[in-house]
Length: 96
Image (cartoon, rainbow, N blue to C red; front, side, top):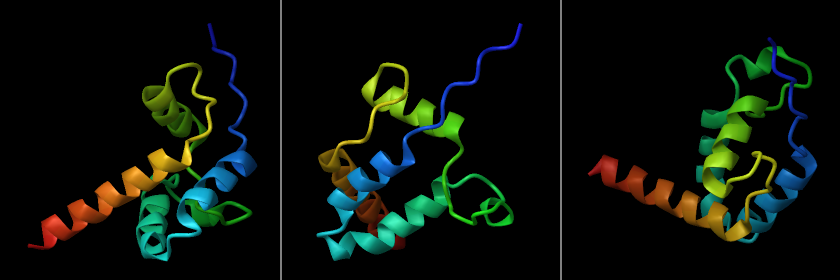
């Protein structure tokens, strides 16, 4: 039995939420770019348009584990900022 494919995330809403978290904080822009590429599906540059979007199933899983529900929630700006600050701190720690 095959499972019905869930709808793709609302990437426009996700982009707005991410921009509201990262836009006014230029010190987080490099980390946001790094994490965006890390989360992107493999070979994203081979598909048109070449935008480093994450795989929809991986995105739903990550959002479901963070917020519960069906994985269709939009990340909250504070959570995005906290995650990127944590990533930034871990990168600094690894360089020591």
